[in-house]
Image (cartoon, rainbow, N blue to C red):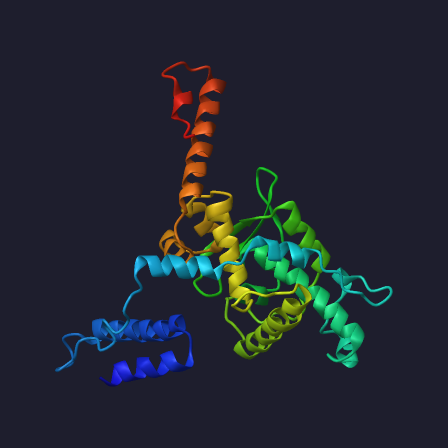
Length: 305
């Protein structure tokens, strides 16, 4: 009864997902304690956090995932923004934490213009990469590595889960990374993926404030929901799945998530993307067959119309 009241109280002050995560963490902690001390303690009760959360119906989960993404036309509008920068300032050379900019202060017109340009580029980088905000606390997060085939990727391990991610760098993404230069803040994640929470909190609030207020105003945002850094990650994931037709496995690797997590949090393919993905894979197969000069059944008839 007390646990249910605790859960209900949390629902009133935080989002449902956050309230559910709190219960899940407490559930897991109790399970670990139970396994460690089972048989050694008398009267050990069953996990009181079990069955507190009512899982969402499939259609509700899919609906929320779809609503989490934003239309790509908004990203196009962000790309078209042009802030008037101070004369002689080159954005990718600016470090906002150096003495010159600190002395100017956040209310200085030059500081505002430069920080807006930095934040808008960072917004585009998140939309084109799917990185979560926590990754932006790492000093080398935007370091591009070259693969054996000559392509470029952003790679590392997620701060939240330690899962490996690999994000192919498209020409657009590379352009934004090169334009940005140093991040708008100093690193708040160390080499062991430990987060300096005070640093993360203040940077996250500044960036979120820019997105929700300044950026939204600059692009004429008129949707019923507010922009947020995580919506950019949602948008990236949904675009890879439904616009480009990538598999769950590939999208999961790019996000640094499991296929199960991607399916649960970012929704399954829509019908159109399934058909296009099928045709793409079949066309690739047919091309390989022709290159090998192999004969067989009329595989052209396997392409879905």
